[in-house]
Amino acid sequence: MTAYLIAQVDVKDPEAYTLYTDRTPAVVESFGGRFIVRGGNPNVLEGALVGPRVVVIAFPDRETAERCYHSPEYQEIIPLRQAASTGALCIVDGAD
Image 1: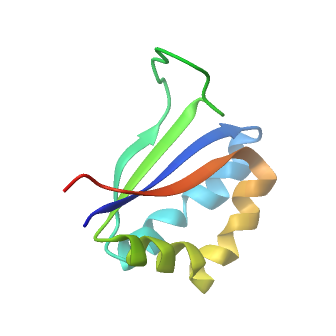
Image 2 (image 1 turned 135 degrees about the horizontal axis):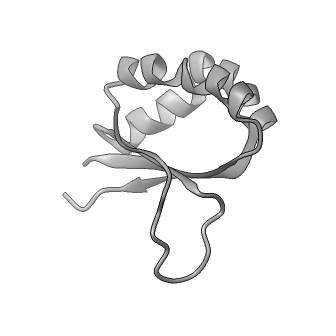
């Protein structure tokens, strides 16, 4: 079953954040992931988002999404994201 990594991010330092976003695609793709949403400008209809940047990445299944997140390659770049932004990440199962 497809699983999605969903992030809501508030970028505090856009220049430093690019150090993270430049490296993320290669890691995601190495685990069979693909970006569905990678940007901003959400039209919030109810409630409040953690940040204005929303990212949705599809993975073949939850196990693969979790392996990607916990991989040495991704763990190495997490500090880059955390230094330049705040936010929340979660993995959810798809409806297929």
